Image 1 (tube, one colour):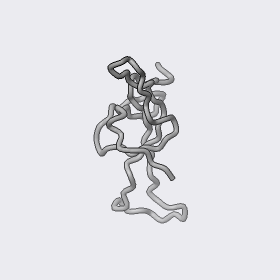
Image 2: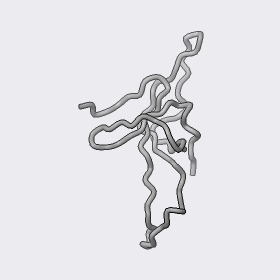
Image 3: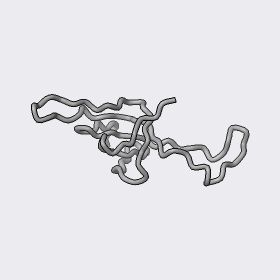
Image 4: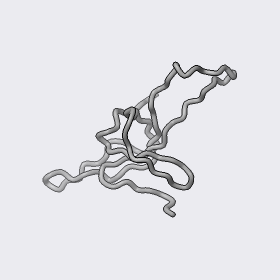
Length: 97
């Protein structure tokens, strides 16, 4: 079984960020307080080549927090953890604090 997945081309491997269902004080949050559909970038591919053969690298890096679309991605299970594999163009944006 593989221990690490290195995405090909301009693909990005992400792990969804699970939002807590209660606050630090123990107050339960209702479902209506939906958070962003965010994920942490685990690995990125090298990028794609343009018509001239020049490599165009992926604009994201490991550790970035990104905004995902509501649907899509390919589910991948590695070492009992679940990840999603997206093309760079499918990721909506990078989240910064």
